[in-house]
View 1 (cartoon, rainbow, N blue to C red):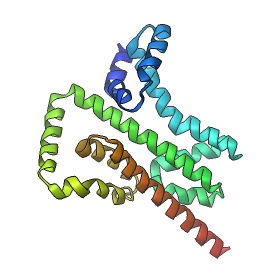
View 2 (view 1 turned 120 degrees about the horizontal axis):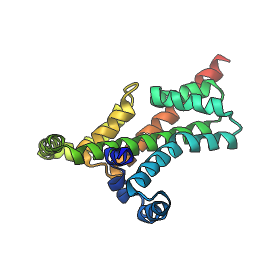
View 3 (view 1 turned 120 degrees about the vertical axis):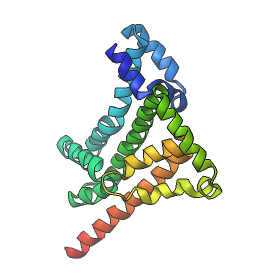
Length: 208
């Protein structure tokens, strides 16, 4: 029952249908082992999230000779300070490619994870579903918002501590968590990361 509640809460079944074409095959293979579809979906939810937030960054760290504890520290910094974590990475003299790749992996996992959780709540709450429908109805009446509203997510990323999380929720709420929305967030995230990273490196080079 606990596994079933977890899988339902995260909404990972519908989430994976959208983003991973081979999801059904993977579930079928794992279900033979676990004996429960709900448990299988819960396990996959954890694995996908942990892969992007922890496993892939640590693997990148090994590739760039970055100690695991330093990589974990950078991950924690990203989750708290978000794009400004690039300055911390530069301050630690970490390779720029490693910093950018790690921040991209963490950001994608956070976006998909938040979207999955929001899906799970909306599918199981009539009030929340009605609220979402009302919000989308108001937004749909604005032609300007429909054309350009999605690009407003980019400057929102700069809000310390909540930017990425807020963007993921706003994209899910107003734009239905589309590929376009995720792409816009990631373009803004990557651009800001690069700007902050190389600005910090430039300042450090000038000071030295």
